[in-house]
Image (cartoon, rainbow over all chains, first blue to last red; front, side, top):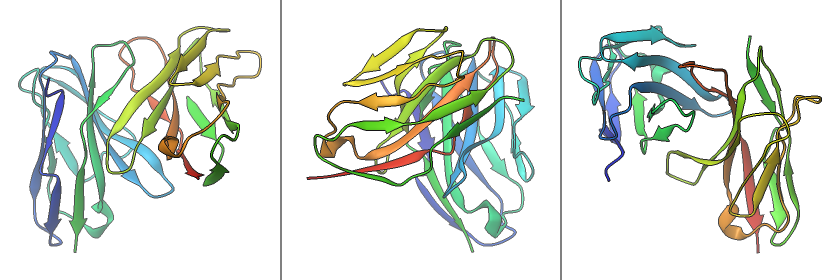
Length: 111
Length: 112
């Protein structure tokens, strides 16, 4: 089983550029979410979705957009990258049991 | 609001030592509690969980007991191995489709 797949694994951007981090899951999970992980800060929730067509903001949503047009996909868009968005990004999904299944992460560097 | 506080690391232990990582929580209602582990270069994966008071979660020699009276969910292992070196995250979730709330993580290094 593929589980949760994130692409790309590594990306370097210049300040002001835009990009999309892709996330796909093949477990038919309704709930999907995006976290960022920074040293000393743990995991912080950016956006989440409880089903296709429904999204909500987490703790740190500014500078990020999401959409959920299908159950499988939950892309995260950076509209105008800033150095403060340098981080490791994780996508996760669950079938509402509380056990989150995580992707392997996407390491983003903004210069 | 809901929050999780866990002991700061890093924690360095010798192989076969006893491990405790403290975790306390603040929550409304009756949350489910989790420990996740992140090995180097990987995403997080569920280690164990407990869904109600006095439940004990266990996996791979790790244990944690849901203590409502002390709002705690401390992680323990009797004899750690080098392969247990990782970052450990305590987390909670209230009912329904609410997001998990994570602690800041505790890095464990086990030396031979």
